[in-house]
Amino acid sequence: MDGNLNVQGSYQFFGIVIIQGELRTAGGGNTEAHFWGGVMAKNATLDTQNISGRATLNYSSCSILATLQATSMTALMRSRSWVQLY
Image (cartoon, rainbow, N blue to C red; front, side, top):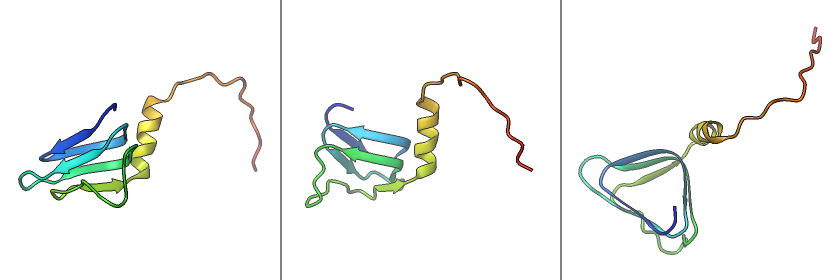
């Protein structure tokens, strides 16, 4: 995403989020903002965080793998060999 990402209220996202700017969250209601997977922000500083309002960022290798498998390009294999294992 080019620019900043502002999330307000309840929100759930599964996958990879790549932001060219900043990530800002604000609370809303009883439901939290959840990010399952991975979040990368270009202008993220560890000194000041703009994540508030009961937002959670959870690293999930399963969500990242599912996203990469769904968006990867398919290619034909050159050859397939068979090997006797036992």
